[in-house]
Amino acid sequence: TRILVLNGPNLGRLGSREPDVYGNANLDDLRAMLDTAAGDHATIDLRQTNDEAELIGWLYEATDAAVPVILNPAAFTHYSYALRDAAALVTKAGIPLVEVHISNPHARETFRHTSVISGIATGVIAGFGFDSYRLALDAVLRLTAARP
Ligand code: DQA
Image (tube, rainbow, N blue to C red; front, side, top):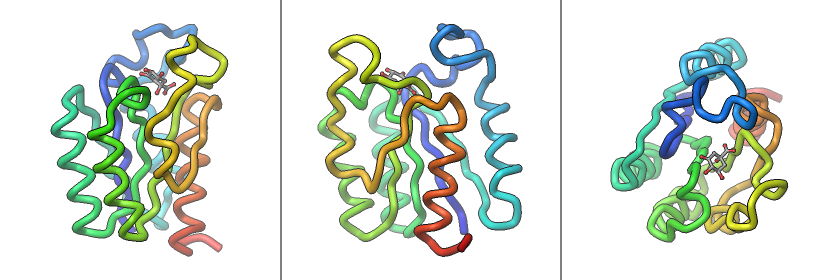
């Protein structure tokens, strides 16, 4: 099984961006952690973009190829109806899409309390640092029955 791990704007700066909120590890560390966690159960295809259109294109790719998605929409979470509509194509096709956040947006500024993605996601995991992704991977593997 291939799993797309898609990361939205500013997550390419992980490691140096607000380390008090997001920690000191970067996307390469995240990729390494997920590769280890996936073992031979899945292949991790981790990507990051600051571009809404590119992210939407990747969700079309997931839909067309029936690839499960772990999505950290970053700030798009809070306002991108275009991203929501593209993410809905994935889940409406019966393909799992787990929304993840490193921080717990509900414990932060009010504008972060709203997610326009959650309503169409298979599930949401937030607040556990990079472990949010590991937990999401576990959930996806269970849903796809690659791990009992
Ligand atoms: C985030 C939370 C968002 O509110 C923020 O805009 C991000 C990262 C997280 O992973 O905690 O960029 O999605």
